[in-house]
Image (cartoon, rainbow, N blue to C red; front, side):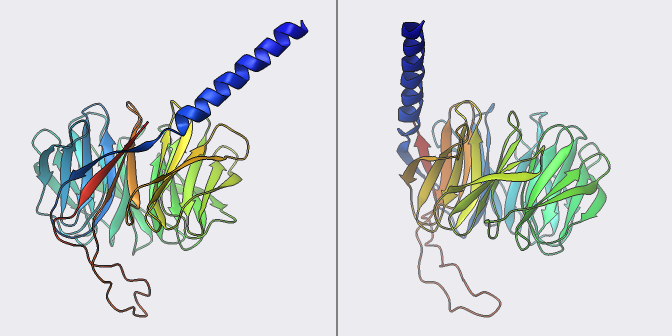
Length: 340
């Protein structure tokens, strides 16, 4: 019996070491130049269609996620922030911040189908499949516009306790969003279109990006101060804080390998966290590029995509903008591909 026990322990140890070694093999595999003008925000992977949708100034770039080849763009917008995808494979939705609108587009030919008025400066956006609604979180009016995907009309405006950042849906009727200026997560019920819970994030300053593990019911909120808060969304409490890089703005989760990711624009790194191990240890820190603060993950391949550009000097700080962003060098915009 002891021999079998030792063999079992040895086998488990070997498997564990193999998993760690595999996780620590992430590296920058490619840089895809896109060019163009201005800044950017979120991007999303359409895994099934092998496409990336990347918000870039007044347009959304569409790129083949296998080759990096540009496929087209959704244009005529004002200042894009996020993209949500309908599971029907036909329709997408853009939060146009300066346009105060949700823009509905065709994924077949990238044409705009509707422009629907929302709140002030819609930012994070997510499709909620149980109710077939789109939730656009308005960063300057502290509320969320709920769009009925069948009619392309806003059917509710839900107040929030502070400035919303990135949302996630659990695909069973709940939507979660980080509240940046309150250091908390709000849980919303999609059917009643109402706030049902608020959870503080101790140790997490200015939460921005969020990822979700729907199997283990975990949320991963990336925060200033080099922390990722891991929250059990069944219990509504923080389970731990993982160490990440500086000035993150997006997060991702790989359900196949149980890994959480944080893209850190301040120090130009991608942090990889073991979400299946007690204490949520960091497995690897991949050097990317300064400014690569947003990311998306293709769960079918395990590839991570980040975007950044080269920068010129920053304008002088003001009271309204104490941390002004540096100017973007024209035609330097690129995608960074990270894989194992």
